[in-house]
Length: 181
Image 1 (cartoon, rainbow, N blue to C red):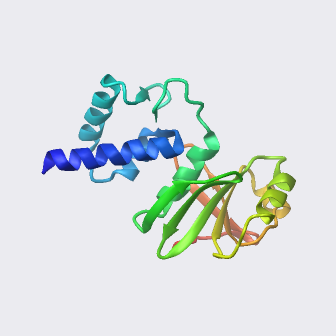
Image 2 (image 1 turned 120 degrees about the vertical axis):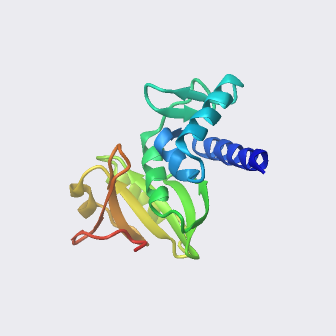
């Protein structure tokens, strides 16, 4: 039984790494909550020795390949995804300008990151996306001042994501509670 569970967790970790290219140790702990820290540490060490992952202890990041370029927008998007656990039933990487898409409580969510000074570009890019499924769009901003510059369909909330995974949610009027309750 332990061996079977170990295989499932390894497969899920490798699936997430293949989707998102990079995860922090803290994100892996949240994605695989059934693993105790010592077991996860052993699993990462074993996979690293087998050459299946690269674990950079200085940056606390895990990738599939040594030369993977770490995308901070993707890492921020993963923190937003993790904020919705355990309600998430499915998640996957998406195409620009959407970072990732997930399903929670039978609703579809799209996470979009907006770098500073790229508001006009993102407004245009997102406004061309289909809205037939009425996705809830969670928009990551670097500063609150960006919020007034963003206007495209289906925005549920804006948020700022801090390096430790803390998330502050906003609506156009100000701070709000997380959209998932």
